[in-house]
Length: 164
Length: 181
Image (cartoon, rainbow over all chains, first blue to last red; front, side, top):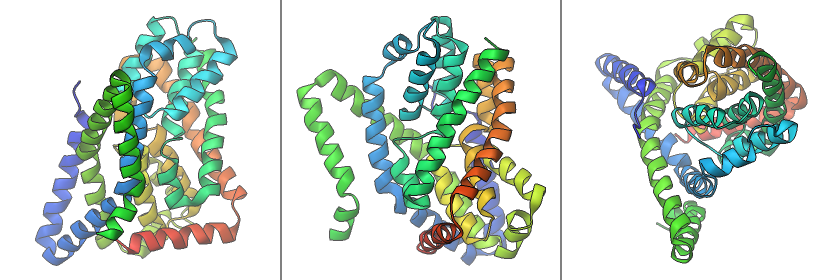
């Protein structure tokens, strides 16, 4: 599987460009920026690592076969609900998720279910909640995820209406 | 050393638990370890530039500038800028939180922070192209057109549900995190 996609290259390009400009303008400030960057990273590294292990376990248990069985064709709103739950608890990078969703569609999954799955996959993060809570507190984190979860049903409904 | 052990305690416990599980159930255990290593590599690929940009932003962009463009009274300009900044991002959602912390420290309005998080989560431009290729333009455009108002509505509902004092506490916490950088 190819790990680096176009946006990663662009992101690196932009970052290097800014770093070079910053370096020529003020070396001391640049050094300070890099120090801050490292500290910000190290600050959430412990939570990152836990999230990564949880994702590993989840993806090992929930493979494509299991997912397609849950949200297969004709599963209706129950399937939408299950798709939303699966999307909410998994954390799959987009460049894996979209082809996988296309595959699931070919395998007979409905557009509404896939719409819910993609939507909660991106907007709701159950396993990343510890990281989010660290920054936004429990209340906001839970409310944001709940609202995003509910909103995903609207997305699913409209996609079912327009595309399905 | 002791402080490091304490901070990484949960990770160490989880890692050991996963190791023990892999001894019991080789197939799923090893698969989980492999996926974790893969995800870690992904993180090391995508995350560093996000944090470097964050460091540069913190050092170079004055608070007044951020307030002017995205703070209280920034209106539509602030909303559009929050969506664009979030959409131009790369990397998983958890990369957005440290950026949001610096934004809060720099005086960005609460609803704009939430819009930024929403955009980062779901309307990323590179991902949109990917989505169009895999699931078709109709699917991708429909989702985008529903998502943009959705993100803004969710941001406003959230800012109504959270009290002024709670928002202030979140900002103080974010400032503490950003200042420890």
